[in-house]
Length: 383
Image (tube, rainbow, N blue to C red; front, side, top):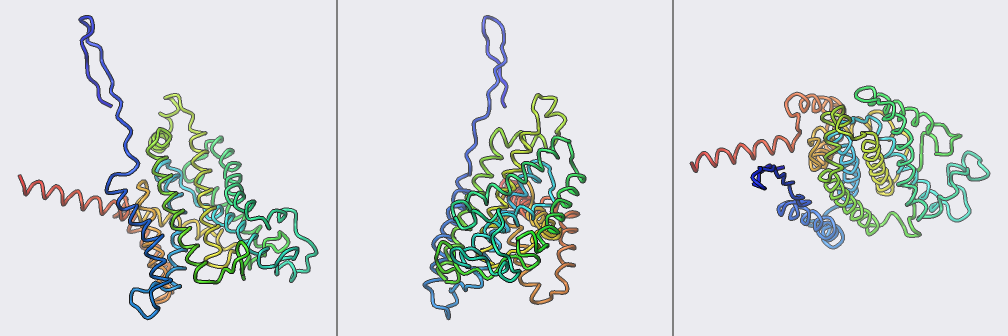
């Protein structure tokens, strides 16, 4: 905001010039976005479907599944950044919303695998005679699509309404979110609840009537996941650069001052909390058909904590950082759990400590600092 003065009737009147709305992305940002879109929608399918398996340029089916899974995790990290990096709310229970979206999709896939008017395999094993009432819409893809958003969104709204209205914040909020997730995990572990118990849902065969275990279907799911991640990135970018996003950042930095300025933090916090939960639900729904299983382990405390680790490692409050962090940490996990599985948890804990002490702004913060230093040195050299 720029202030200037004009002479009007021999009186200097201050004139405030509001800054213009910044573009969603810079030219370099749009270039990087288009490159990512081309890689997801064109390059990856070509390398997987049309390049021969013996070629060094062939993208294996294993790599497609791994990258698809990591992109689902990246959506969760992006959702976490909206509430933690930009609103200052640390959730240790986002695994619940991820799992809820996954279970909604798993119910649909289980009905597809069982066939019309048949019970899923686990219900037959447990000698169930009919579907529970909450499975009523599980045979409809349209209803499943709506519920993927609605179920995590409603749970988040109810929980957030009471939590934010009671002004629970900080470590107390984090503990409550983890307690909620743990309680849900215990509930889903029970066979009588109708969610497959500790085994969850697995052995999926079809989606929309088409075979699931084909190379073409795996690549289609990969492309859909990549486009969803890029779409959510643009949505998040638009949100944080709007007036709504500026209020969120003000809440993060000084919530009391926001209240004194005439804004009620409750609707802002509740809105971004629900949006973040629905993003995780979508990620879970995309994760299940690619990995082929969903069970209560996804609601464990470790799963939710890992989402926060990805965000911190990449750089919270940057949007790009959490995506980078999800790829970096899960790429390292994929390699290390094969090469030295007994060291993975030590590595993850040590990584979080190093980032907290020496890289508070994560990988993206380090890159930006180095780039700024190089530019300063360059200018000094020119001078």
